[in-house]
Image (tube, rainbow, N blue to C red; front, side, top):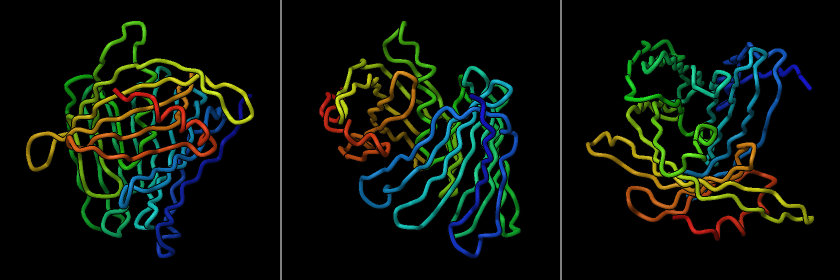
Length: 269
């Protein structure tokens, strides 16, 4: 059933900016596909929550909307990602927070050319950056994590093996631009998991290694597990290594905590 979804983002990191509102328009007549909250725990400063919505536009394309709030209260940032009818990235728009000051971020993608604009809301000069992806590019606005689940829709399970994707990103919680990020993703399998109440949910397990350029030189790698249902809805993720060192950062969707015991015990690699 088609629903009209009124989606308003209010920048409310502090009462001072309560009047700084942004309406992301163009979603009248859209269909809500999925919504939820991902709670991330792994120790300050990574602890946060991410409220997300995936919707289908009236033109057949898709939109991801999210709001990320740090557990420490340091920031609350919001983003919109637009995709075409095949979930190929088109553009991103975010309301960020750099050193206590709000900024407006926009990312436009034409072919492999990325145009990024960062406009401070305190009257400071805007800056524009151009990046070129070596291959088809996905968009990210950290510290969001729900945008990474779009990759599972592009993974070719018939071909299998390790498949590579590329990212371009502008952070929303700090002034940092990333291009040239690579993701090597593999599908580990699908398993039925018994839920509280007795019903079963088929869960897909992906692993990937994200390799990012390090501002100081060289690269920096993160190893992930990702879990979705068979409709590619996010269920949870785990970061097992950062820069080659073991860590244990877990993001889990509220209402699906009963899946953790079975899924976190599954071999990561």
